[in-house]
Amino acid sequence: MEKVDDFTLTDYNGKQHRLSDYKDAKAVVLIFVSTQCPVSNAYNERMAKLHEDFKERGVAFLGINANVAEDAANIKKHAAENKLPFVILKDKDNLIADKLEASVTPEVYIVNAKHEVLYHGRIDDSRNAEKVTSQDTRKALEEILAGKEVSEARTKAFGCSIKRVAKEAKKASS
Image (cartoon, rainbow, N blue to C red; front, side):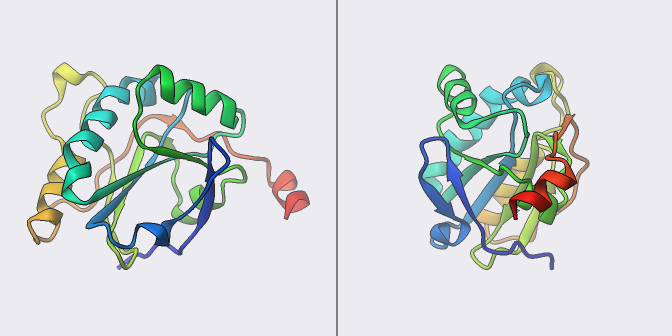
């Protein structure tokens, strides 16, 4: 089973978060998000609703912004304006996006306490909320919380490509 290495990223308030900080959660939902992507923005309400519906059931949510042009101030403002209630971390050198091979926003990874990936893919099957026929992330979370194996562990995420740091800039900063 694919695993996510522990990582530490900083949120838009400058506070560090480690994936291992959430070891008591029944599942951790990692969602790659963007302030500028119209597809990611079309999901803001649905992401907030997923958080609302599952936070009391032991599920932690971490947004991850890996877009090079979106800084902490933009992310904080965007989260406030769009009522995104979960922590959003900045992956400034795309280290986590690269490790997970995340390519679009929004893109979801659900991991367990051992950091094993139980689900990877889309939130649901339509950018347009009225046309959704398959709530993939919600279904995966319900199955996980019921102690079942995720019936559809992989779906095709769609959205805007993650705008990565140039390879040369990554080498210079490391």
